[in-house]
Length: 313
Image (cartoon, rainbow, N blue to C red; front, side, top):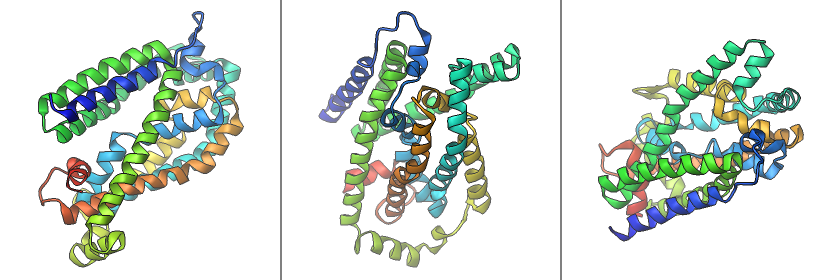
């Protein structure tokens, strides 16, 4: 086992330990496990909501889209802004209805509001089924990160198995409080990683970031418009609208716990105002993807661009 792999495994276990430490005596109360008795502060709610945007897709996927599709990768910044504009109005209402009705999940909301236990069960099943690809995306992204960092496919597979087991364990043990603690650490590490990477890119490209886009404009002008195969204007507009509405109206089950756990509607409104600024950090992977066009060998796997550049710089 090389040093990088050892550090990776230690990191995965450390995050699991942080998650385990979030458990509080619940006396069998499911509300504590799912929504933390609806007492989360603005600070905690901020990281829970932001954590839905900072994922392995943010780190690898956006850079990969920029590498192959250019400015189309900016769709993430646009849809998240729309998302939080809508949440300014919807999230406090969702929280208030949850408090009055005792809702712990999205399914509870539909079962009660439409007076149909069957509808609630259908929503629960659909939410769980369609959450699986989202979870698979995160775990697969982790495996890719480890594989690229260590050069070991076996190490990548091992990390996916270990991460899956430990994640299930700490979520079952600590519930939403464990998720919140991991969100603090995860977001901080990702921001540090993104800043280090953008500094490395700026120092590696002639003329820094400004020189990067000037070179791209001269050598690959098509990447600054919506004309790439699969990443044209239709992709951009539909991705922004569908993702913005989907997140803003709470259509995905995993968006509900942070909202239902918030201590007040005011906390959710404050976050909706300021979280779009937080998402500016997502512009860094986009810039990294553009740098990959100049610094990474053509034909390289798009999802590996960010880590390839990290190794080179």
